[in-house]
Length: 145
Image (cartoon, helix red, strand yellow):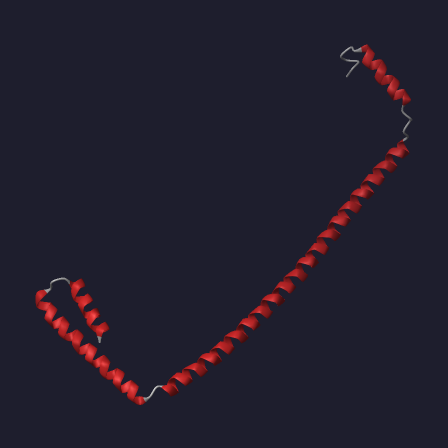
């Protein structure tokens, strides 16, 4: 390039540097190329090995996570079963503490409340003042009882 551009000083400087370099034989070039290809092959093999190790590590980690989640689910299930048992005992205690007379009295109260609501509906039908006020009155009577 320097010769074509007619830069004589640069041409001379480059020739001096070229003469100063040791002569490289064809066999040296072939050996360097073989070494380069060997290192490239080693690099590829190391990459494959690293990928296999990463895959195994991912599998082990996945198995550990599955084990932890399974253990957690078993714990939650046992806690839930204990809570169900405790609730069953509480329901039994409540059932034992309620007497038949309490149930009869509550049924009578419910029938009284139902009859009061029916009377209110019958009274409010002809007037049709405001449905919201009649509902509020009904709720207030129910709450007072």
